[in-house]
Image 1: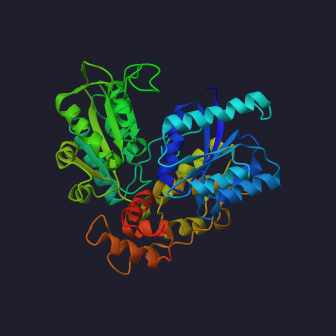
Image 2: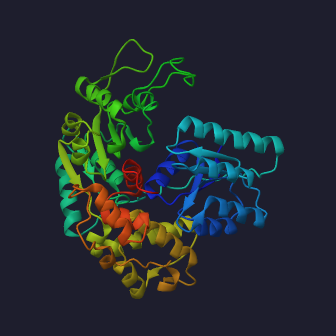
Image 3: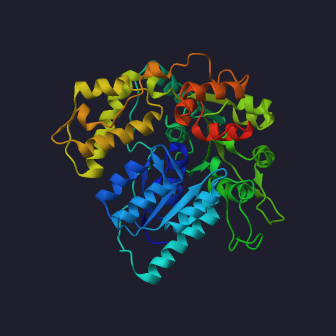
Length: 453
């Protein structure tokens, strides 16, 4: 595909970042918004988008409300609605209001590709949407330059990176969503003797049980319906280098045995092939889940866990490193100046006080978004509190009234989830923070325990 521009409206930050990476790998220029109002603001400022991919449920509305607004604004941009559990009928109603199509979660990359291609085929046939050549955006998660935190926990983390990087040990990186676990994995790679070899990052949450063997180990042409050509697979692509498996706890159980066998034998067998291929990779993994709890529940193999966890590095949350907020924020200010063509020079003490008192549930990823928006809205050369979006959740408001952590203390999961939801009046984002899990994991557990979504 030629470079094309897409707007993704998704409030689950980790899932949105995964989608963004997927589209950027496929030649798209991507903007990610976390809610309906942010999407409306972005669309009001730019008419360059050729397609919108929106979650049906949003924190400040829904995909149908966004469709209505697009119709009222006279913006003829094709919209694909993403749906979760039990929402297909509502998505069908959205099509009646003008949505181009709907897509069920979990997202199947092949189906997503076909639907996106159908949008652009329609555009070519009708010649309604303008062609624009746009440069790719930087990844939402990555730091364009290395910014080293100076808090005690950060310094401890960097010392562990320096210690383990030159070895061949498998490293498991733990931490909350948005803390920069992939960045840590890249640091380990660049400080190893494999720095000149490939670094391949894989989001295990996007691998279905049907597609995972093909994506990881490759396939032969004709081995299944959509296998129209040979595929090398992530292991072969990373041969001689580093393979980073992000959110490894989401890897389908049926694929875990294949992964363990590959790591032990250092050989892969592509789907549809009768022969094995040698692979030599270093494995790094990341997770924000309690894998020991997953082992106890029978959702993760204990032998695979020990194979992957030869050395563990914990990435601290931003609220644990308040003294680093200014350094990160100032870096993001400079980055936003370059991206947006602005000349904002300072962050005022009052604005910094607001940043320091906020809880940062989205960690560095959220801080980057906030500073980028502040640079855009700043009139003058200094970011003030008026430039910042409303940051209302203070650190003390996040302290649970009872021990609700599923990570540190996984007992009585259902009861803790119900207590957390009651404490925050049904706000699933805040409930996930109290439980110290990501929102996608919370939805999965609510579905598992038949808790009303």
